[in-house]
Image (tube, rainbow, N blue to C red; front, side, top):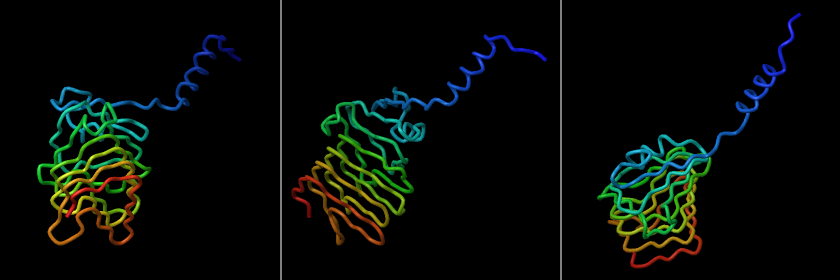
Length: 186
């Protein structure tokens, strides 16, 4: 019968420990000029896994229909909405379909879109904190199914042609506002 040297046994035990250790959360740094860890916000989210942070450098980003992913935090580097702006250029900014576990959006301005966030799946859960939502030309939040919570957000100059200017919930949709400011929406 062969006996492995103590060194070989130690290496095997160490390999099992490393394999069993939980992965470290990663921060994906995104810049408006595309020179960060990923070229776009969507590419950063697509690369991230649950627990990761997608962090936006200060500046303006022109992206539409960004598909959120479960367990991801999307935030500006300063967590202040004056730092990073996502300009929807007349289109929807975020789509939250099958976003579970809960995702987070923090300290970002969402501007000039058709809607700030849209959801049509019951498993979607998103918390939005310290954000500024302005100039949406349709319903700012459209939630057919899913659950949105807004904390310390500001809604300014959002409008609609016939439906709700701020939030429209249908089916199993639910939108909650905590300590938010709502100004000049029509």
